[in-house]
Structures are given as structure tokens and as C-alpha cells.
Image (cartoon, rainbow, N blue to C red; front, top):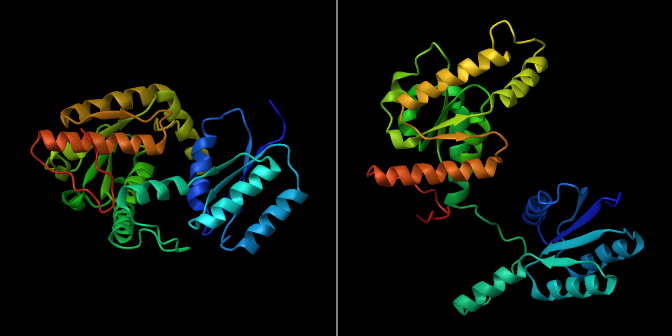
Length: 292
């Protein structure tokens, strides 16, 4: 394996966040390769593009690629020609999508640089759902259960909070309720439609690692009450599993599962269970339709 990291140059007429996210997604498939993402945002004129490629010519790197999201066709052509001249592998991340939509609709793209994306109902709905998740973290307000789209239940540090917030980002109002051995869940949980509830579990040894880090960050050791004791964690997960069975909810193992994948599974599970029960999972504005 080469020692030099691969430079991923992101050229965009806006912030470059779209291309950077895709670069990180691609990066995850090359675990033995080191990457550096370099953004060239607000490159919206030929002069700005010239400055980018002047810098690339002067600072020659043995391994680099260019990813670009430019709405203007002329600008995309300039990037393609410059990359060919410098023998830099490149990918046009936006041109193909624009071309396909133009072909399907018969209309031409407006090619308006930095036009806001998703700032209508979709944007505000996501913000509201994320705020809802934060307010209702760890079952803070049981009465809010009746307002939720999705309810996550599981042991402490099984991934409930990050999943709740990410599902909020997807537009779903999500609450999470910790299941603690010896303590009965709130009465409001038992009154919630079962199809809304998804249980989370995690490998005991992985949970021990997570809890140990948490305890050390707080300056403690965590063995006195069993919070970070492996034998007691096994017992705890057994008891939590029993509560989840009483709730008749499906359970997802979050061990080694990417946040996005876990969220997608949860949405699909809840949607399917809602349909079977004659219910309906609210679909946020701008969300993808889940095919059966």
C-alpha cells in the first residue's frame, strides 16, 4: 500500500458538502487507504476554476482525484478537460443527474448557482423533529410519547440517542426510552401503538467498552453498580430483552451497524408494521417512499 494519502479534491459552486459526503461514503469502502478531502468551494466562475487548477499544477501530488458538483455545463466541461490534461481521475457528480432529469422532463436545468436546497417544509420539519428528539432524550417527558412517530427502547448506551437525533434529521419525531432492570417502563409506553416501538440491543463486550469510556470520562470506574461490569451487563441485557419481548417489538442489534443503515432498517420496520396493523407512519416532506 502506498504511503501517500489519496487527495480527494472537491470542486463545487456552493459549499461542496454534497461531494464531500459522497467522498466520505466512497472512502468507507477503501479501509486500507488514507484519504484527505480538500474542498474548493464557491468555484462559480472560469477565473475561480483557473485558480484551482493553477494550484493543482504547482502542487503535484502522486495520488489525487477530483469530484465536482457544478450546475453550469460549461464549467463542468472545463473541469473535465483540465483533469484530462493533468491526467487526474475525475467524476462529475451532478451532470449525470441533471441530464437524466432533462431527458425525462424535456425541460432544461436553470443552472442557477447556490440556489437553496430543501429550505421549505422539508427543512423546517427536520429541524422540528431534531428538536423533538433532543427534548425527549432518555424518556425525559413520557407524556410526549403520544406525539412520536417512532419510539426506541433499549439499554443505556445501546445507540438510542444518536439514532433518535438522526431519525429526527430524516424528519421523524423520535423518542427513546431507557429500559432499566428492576424499574418498570413508564405507563405511557404500554399505551403506545406497538408498531411504533423498536428495540435496540448490542453485544455485551462492545457495550462494556462504550460504558468504560463513558465512566472514565466522568472520572469514575463504574463497577460498583454493575454499569461497566461484563457479567452484570449480560444479566442486564437479558432483562432488557425480556421487557422488549413483553412490548412485542422487533429488536435491532446495533453492534458494528452504521448509523444510517440502522436508521433505514428502523424506518422500514416501523413502516411495514404500521401497514400490517392498519396504521400509518407519517412520511416527512421530501422523504423517500419505501417500497414493500
